Structures are given as structure tokens and as C-alpha cells.
Image (cartoon, rainbow, N blue to C red):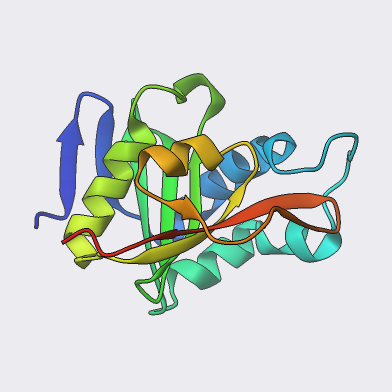
Length: 158
């Protein structure tokens, strides 16, 4: 599969350490979507996991496969898969949501990595997106330090 896929939604490519600042800014800008209602601050353990340095470390780690969607020289979406069976991150800039970027990134990554099964700890906001991608809830909704999530699984699609 080619290293870059150009779509009407932007160019999808493998993320690299030079993308860390932009990816961190994107993920941090969406924090309101994964905090519990009424919560205003990210817990320290979570905030530390979305710093530019944390992204540099993940992008350089062979356990992670990370991809970005670039539109007009701006990273507008990001996806990361850990150990080829855990959808670790999937974020789309607020102004580009509901345009199919999440689906395009997911399709690119799963084809490139030959993924048939995967799990995700979805933010409660993103559950419908993951359901459209074929994921199903496998556990009750849970909360950890003001972050709500739903464990979901995509079973073998082949």
C-alpha cells in the first residue's frame, strides 16, 4: 500500500515525530469531548499522555502505528493503533467532523496493517462513530478520574 493516500478529505500518511506538536494541539483541543459532564480539568495522568513529548515517544515506538490526515498543510485528523489490536486514538478536528475523515483514516490503517479485530476505549461522545465502523460495546460504561469511556470491540470482519 502506498505511503500516502490522497482523498477529497486530505492526504493520509504515516505520522512522524515532526507531527507531534500539531497532533498534541489537535487532541488537546478536543478534551471537552472526553471529560465527564461538569468536569473542567483533565486528570494529570491523562494530560501527560497528550503532551507533544508523549506523541514523540509513541511515534518512535514500534508498538504504535500512527497516521494523520493533512488538509491545506494542517493536520486535521489523527489515528493510532497499538500492537495492531487496540485503537489507541482517533481524533478529528471539530471543524472537520462528520465529513468521513474518521472512516477514511480507519479504512486506510486497517488495510495497511491488515487488521480484522480490534478493541477501543471510546469516549462516550464517539460511541456512535465506532458503531458505524463496526464496533460493539463489550462492557458497561465506565469512568476514571472524570473521563467516561465505553469498551468496544470489532470482531473479525473477514
